[in-house]
Length: 381
Image 1: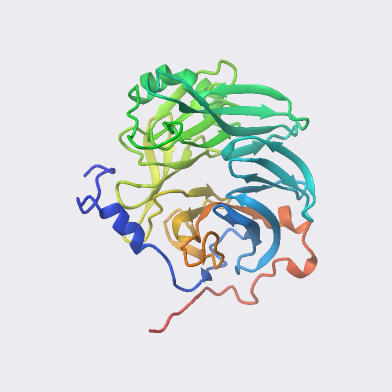
Image 2: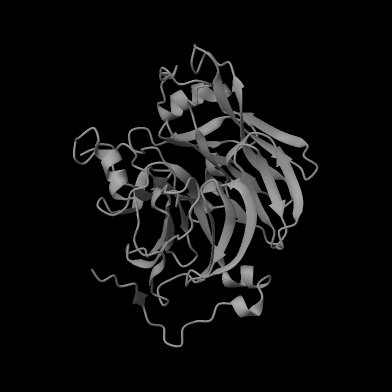
């Protein structure tokens, strides 16, 4: 059976599975195995929420920042928070929540702060691109790098690279536009950008060299790499395998970790791909208990475990390479209208103890349990 085939074969299966995964059980940390976890602090917010939370391994909020309409944040080495006000810009606050820097514009889905202080931002604007769709306007997803003074020093536009997407990724053009949807056509819905790190693969294969940009186009079921110097898409993968994916991340090995949402399949997977061979070398899948159709992410931790954000249920959990769940957290926080699910967490990141505790009051510092026992929340019917 194809990975993209709904397990039940019924047209309503993905929607039914999504409704089944709506979570109203115990919140907070419901499972913790200290001897198997990567111990640190986890940063997240509710999707389009008003607060960024930093929690410890017990689920205790040790710090938080007031934000606006945010779905992801990044804790910088100086203790500052970089976050998005979705569709409006990227903002930087110091540890105490004071404004430090901002860039205002139609940001969406992702950004990255470079070591030199510049910021890479995924943005969009309406454009006419008949090679994409001959009718009406489309969204031109593009990437800019701005200095601390908001000067643009690099810019790249996806609509200019349809030939490479066709040749390397098998994407067909022009794209079919759904009737009855107002506004520009969201043909690519790019949801991730990441500069590639230095890896053994990148030293021998120029497509994956450090500094090139890894991206994800959700409706195209495609992840790809942009050569930073030439601007060309030099690698693309996923058509026929991925299903509305999020957050591809290159690991130190040169492999790529991808959250494969399985939107039409009806269950999600986290896959580790060898991009040189196209082989999936590791995956985590639970067709009965793991499904986030619309948003999500995954992070490979330094001890080899994987932190998974099952976004649409408001769940974060950590699994070992052997796929054992060793930490499980359900957010108690909500965003959106009263009575709505809106426990969604777009993305989360785990930071080492020493990275955070330079800024935390000692009372909030992590203290290992006197006995390194595992514990689980028990619900009695």
